[in-house]
Image (cartoon, rainbow, N blue to C red):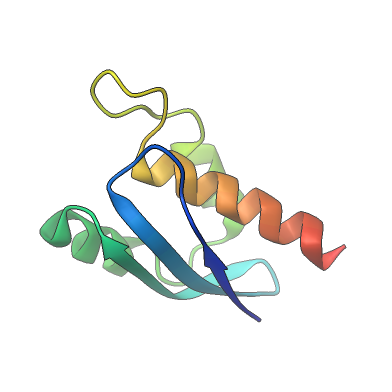
Length: 84
């Protein structure tokens, strides 16, 4: 199942990923810090949604109340709700 998510309050304009059996694959970001996000895609490919949420939920960026990775955790939580 391919999902698109429009993050709030961060540089990324859109994120897309597949969530199959609670495993994330084909993660892609539009906008944001290109080099950092390319590295994170490589690190997160094949990880479980639980693991990603545990690592990044609540992480902030500078003075912002959220971050790109916090928004990914939120997207994964929402994707799970949609699948139920």
